Structures are given as structure tokens and as C-alpha cells.
Length: 209
Image 1 (tube, rainbow, N blue to C red):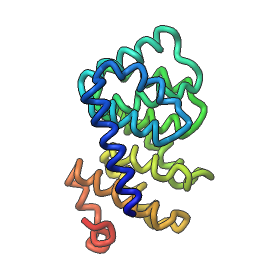
Image 2: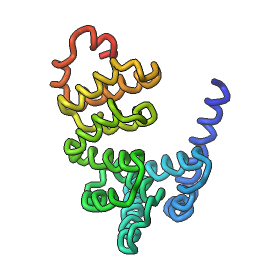
Image 3: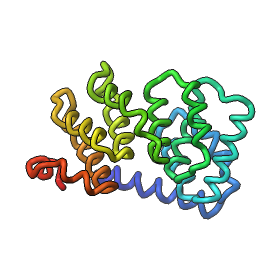
């Protein structure tokens, strides 16, 4: 635990140093590191971009537009990271691009990143049939569980909540996964408090609401 805390502090210090010392100059190098094999490096890059706010958002949107003009490559990992970060930053000018990108990815994991970005823009409800299938029936549902839950959390509807509640009662999922499902439900109810009426007292206690 102490070692994890030390690593977290080192990571925070590194991000702070990049932000303060390099600023916008670091953007092109950071972008190239999004394809690094080390997931910790990629996480640091994402956190740094998010910390840089509007300037980073402008840079990432321009980069996405460049890739669009050249023609998006098949299964472009960097483009997915860019989309994910822009979604986190609340960029609304990429709706059309997100729909174009859907045709370029083969995996469900990649599509879920695009679904989440669209859900954050208020356009996730149309994907509920696919999300319900992935969460409850897909043969890879255990692998997809947390990613699907986060997309659903950004689609605060009765159907989304129903899917999460069914998953919470599904013994195929681990206790850790069920804890994640509870967090997704909490986030959804926070976004739309009137959904709370669909939870009985027992479920509220189970989820911690």
C-alpha cells in the first residue's frame, strides 16, 4: 500500500512538472506516447492532457481533424485515446466524427469508447440494445462489464438502470465487478435523481445510496 502511494505521488509530481515546465511544447511528444506499450505511461499522458484544459482540447481536436482529412486508419489506437479525452473534456464538436470512426474499429472495446463519448454528448440512448446485449448476454460480458457500465452510467434512463440492476443480480460477475456496477448506478442516479424511485430500500442499502 505504501509503495502504491509513493508511485502515485511520483506520478503526480511528474505530471505537474510536465505541465509547469513544458506546457504546450510537450503536446506532440505526449501524443506519440499514447502508443507506448506501458499502460502507466499512457495513463500519465492522458492525465497530463486532461490537466492542461482548453489548450490541450484545442490541440487534440486539431489532431483529430488532421487524421480525418488524411482518412482515419483502421483500428487507430491514438485516435481512440483522443476521442476518449475529448469526451472527458466535454467537446461537442466531434459528433459527426465519432459516427465516422465507428466504421474503422473491429473490437467491441473500441466501439464502447466511441459509445461513451457519444453518451457524454447526450446521444447514447440509441445504443442501448447493443449495450444491454453486451452486459447481459455477450459471451465476453465479464471482460466488457466495467466498460459497458461506464457507458450506461452516462445514459440516465429507466432502461439503462434496469440493465445495471439485472447485472448486479447476475452471479456471473465478481464482487469487484459488482462494486463497479454500484458506482455506475450511483453516478446515474446523481445525474438523474428521479431514477431513485425505481430502487426499493433493500437495493438502496445494497448500493449504498
